[in-house]
Every structure is written in structure tokens, then in C-alpha cells.
Image (cartoon, rainbow, N blue to C red; front, side, top):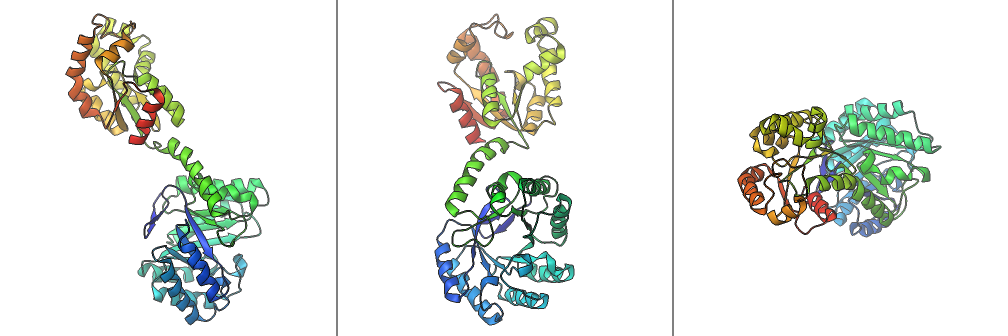
Length: 426
């Protein structure tokens, strides 16, 4: 997803950003609200100018914007006039609406402007051009307080807004039941997965739509609104509850999606714990795992030990390369590799293109203790000693280090500690 940066705030990256609206009627009420939110844990502030009782006096609107800007300091500011037909506080004809936006544009102190889709393509194009010339980001918005349109219609709205060159399309709808909420979430996910030229803001309003206000990171909405002072739309959640809910989602969502477009590749000498770590990491991250030795055994229909016995080590190394090539298109997977996979330069190049390579290490003494009773390791079967293990590790050391992006020592650590260290270092 393309991101939109406003000051120090990046929309479309990580946890959805939180916005609070100034909804006072008088100049003093708005300034007092502004002072309250200036120190609150919100990322962006919106001035809902349609609440302002002197909205039709352009000079007073402009003067108040200057005062708001001064109070907010570095917090990004959205300027919004929400018309009555879209759930706002005033009825305003298009000419007056557009003229006021043009005056605001001249001021050049607004970070983001919210323009309603209803004003028509020609008017939108004119305003988009003006505001973009001033480096102001543009939200194009569509609100339906009566119903949730069909999925196709909602998708049509969002794509039309993208085509009109806005920075962030916004869609807010009213659900009649929870199936309507699901429709809104589905169209949000479609935009995230298929039409990610811009971030989007979506919400299903009212109590039924609460999940859409806290689940943006999962479904794809980049901004959510809180009711820290007074709700500006039905269903808004208080700032503390909102932040807590989104942090919980982030904790589990980020963990399982951190490797969505990549892989974790475990390498290391036999006995360093690759298979056990792979299984535990698969559980922790809820992603697939595969062991190259197991894949080779399945392809060759015989054990690794028999492959070595019947065809020799060189043949087995070719099987490893073949297995890696077959896994080249896999994503979001943990790949546990045999101890000698780094012996071929070609294998290292393939793995580098597949994901992050994690080298697991252990002392020869610990490795010996782990593998001494095993008879399924052809390289060690006739050479089971600490001295042999130590020498072989030393012979392979440079190749391991060349391949590794991350090195994790597994001595005296349980699986949970090893997995946590891997996740924190990637």
C-alpha cells in the first residue's frame, strides 16, 4: 500500500492513526477544545467547520484556522465541511462550499482537506489541482447515513475517488445489520489487496460497526476517529479504549504478518535446534513450516541416510539445490535447512532471494550432547565425537557467516526464548 506522510504522521503504515474532531459552535468553544486535544494521545485533529456558527463569514473561518494552527503546533490538521446531505450540521450550496475551500487553500496552513465526492468531478478536479499545488493532501469522502450500499457500489465509490487523484478515499456507511458491516470490511480488504495505490479510510457507523473502527490494521483502513470530546459521528469510541483495542490487535496481527512477503530460513550445524525451533516458530507465528530434508526424503522416496548410502553426498547436495529452487515462489513460510546446505554457493544465493537467513549456533559440546544417540545423521554416524564436530563446524564457519543475516546462539535457551529472539531481530 502506498503511504501518505503528513508531518511526522504516516497514514497507511502499521496501526491506524487516530483522529479527533473539533466540533464546537463558537470561536471560544473551538479554541478550548483545541487546547484540550493538543496534549491528547491523538495523531491528527480535524476541524469540523460545519459545526461553527459563523461558517458563512469567510474572514472569521480563516482567522480561526490560524488560531487552531497555532495551538496545535505540529499536530496535522484536517479541514472539513460536512454538508447536511452527508450527515453534517449545515445545508450549504456547492458554490459557497467551493468558494470557502478556495479561500482556505490560499491560507496554506491546512495539512489535509476533506472534499465531498457529491460536488461533482469538475469541481473536485479544480480543488484537487489547487490543493496539490500547495502540497495539501486530499481526502475525498462519501457518507451514507441511511444504509450500506452494495459491495460493488462501495467499490465503485472508492475507485472513483482514486481516479480523481485524491490522496486518501474515505467511505462511511450505516449498517442495518452485521452482514452490512461484513460488506464494508470486505470492500476495505479488497482495496488493500487489489487496489492499493492509496491508503483508504472506511467505517461502518453506529454500535454495530464498532469493529471497523478498531480493526483497520487487519482490513486496511488507515485512520479512525475517536470521541475524546464529543462524537462527530455515531459509534465513535473513547480514546483510551480505542488505543487499547488497537494495540492488542497489533500485537497479534503484526506477529503473524511480519513475514507475509518473505520467509524465515533456518540454517546451522546439525543439532543446533533447527527442526525444534522451526516447529515452535510455526506455532508462534501461525505460518507454515517445511524441512528441506523431509522434502527431499519425500521426493526421493527414501531416507537421507539411504540417499547418502546409495548415491553419495554429491547427489544429496544436488537434491538440496533442487528443493530450494522448488521453494523459490513460497512466501510466509519457515524453511528449515540441512546442516550442509551452505556448502554450495548456489544454495546461498537462492536462500538470500527467499527471505531472512537465521543461523542457529551451539557449542560442539552442546551439539554432541544433543546428537550422540542419533543414528540418522550420515556425516556423523562414524565420527561421533566432540573433536570431529568442532573441526567440521570450523571448516564450515565462513560459509555459515557469509549466508547468515542473523545469528542466534541456542545454548542454554528454551524454544520460547530462541523464537522471541528471532522475531525481535528480523
